[in-house]
Length: 324
Image (cartoon, rainbow, N blue to C red; front, side, top):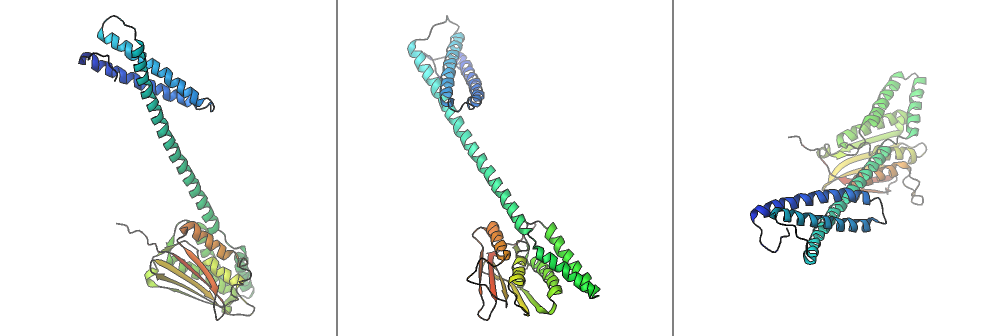
């Protein structure tokens, strides 16, 4: 608050202070509206802002001087150049500080908004990519399963055909209607994997032997749905040799704070000379792990000394939140 050289009585000081604050509020409100309009002129924005602050400072100074003269009730006295310079400089400093604070806060809020928009866009893109990977049902699996049902019908093995159709419907219903972003228990994943393998056994019959072992202490652990099915499908599509009985073993276990999943087979193994030709199963699984866990999950592969291949997945252990 700027005062005349003499001390002001409270009858003058308080009303003048209220008028000063009110006029300052109105001036900054007007500046706020004018700044929005000035923003549209990119090249002239800085000059316009400086001109607006100077003009507002002059108006504020004149208002404070006239209001103070009126409260004293004396004859109107013109401002000296010293008073004019002092009061206008103070007004300009205050409005320039307010302007800097206004744009500082606005810039911060704009940056926060832009970051939130970028995070939302990234999150939506991640969700879309996960759903795409999750719903990437292999058409060969569908064709082969339906063809196997038709073969059973032609052989008049209607009971087996009905069982296989029911299992196929259960598997597809779960695949299509389960939230691709919601993790399920390891016990559910194992049950779903058994359903899938029962369908495949309908095709391969005695040529396929599968074992799924799960440690009891990791049944409630959470993992992405249908994470292992593409790996097993990859084995059946790329790992089987002619006239071979394929043996696949899947084991879920806990190691320290991680869930470890091992998939082994006695098939062809990985062709180390052509690592890129391993089917979409591994690539699909790797992308889902990267999107879900970033760098906190690992997928490693190799060939077994006795023949066949192995795939190992390690993911952080998660448990469902207890409901109190």
